[in-house]
Image (cartoon, rainbow, N blue to C red):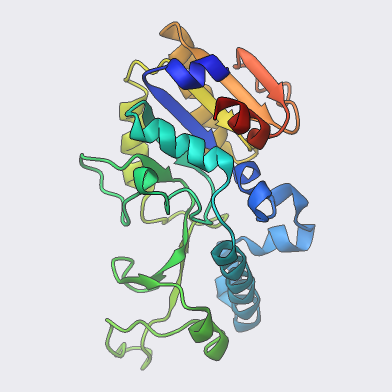
Amino acid sequence: LIQALREKKRIVVIVGAGISAEAGIPTFDSMSIVTKNVFNIHMYRNDNDTKKLNEMFSQMYNRAQAASPTQFHHVLAAIAKEGRLHRLYTQNIDGLDTQLASLKTQIPLSSNKPWPRTIQLHGDLKTVMCGANPLHLSHFNPALFASEPLGPRCTECKVNKRTGKVPVVRPRVWLYQDWNYPDDKAITTIKEKDLQQKVDLVVVAGTALKIDSAQRLARDMCKTVRENGGTAVWINLKAPAQKLDFFDVVIVGSCEIVARHVS
């Protein structure tokens, strides 16, 4: 694996919260059931739930702001600088990866080329969007969410004639049961194009692949790379579930330890 990460020419990496754990960002598995249930678009249906969700986002934002990219992030950035990282698909919303220059992304994501090196499958916590117009974007400001717990007002919108109110903004992240995530179409297009590329190494790191869409992406990408004579690798603290039988190499251990060896 170390040799492959140093030498392969067209690499795709699919990551989850495990690669940010060393930076102090909790993984989904470490959260309580109550916290996990909050990650649902239905939380915006009533004021009390909306306040609870926005409070959690503010806490997550503050934690992400205090964190720094891990060694694994820096290894990915180095591979990208060398032109060998074809794509990074990240399920993380902390933005630790995209703050590194060679891993920059694009918000909103376009369905047309050129595409960024990093594809944020679940969005970016540091960006907020208008509930009425998802193209109205601004930076997350915890002070504004503290003063307006139901969400700050969009500064680009006018008063809605029907409701008599200005629409509010919310973090631009994917939540469970959210069927209208703005980047869905572009992500699907990019995935389909990447599956046609002659990738020679796929690395799935720091994720148990419990979310169906991420699992399908990993399965399809691993199948493609193996058909091309490449290698599919798993790196996580836990072994893959039995149904995830599409890896050539399974490393049960820390992403950071792997990154230090590669460095």
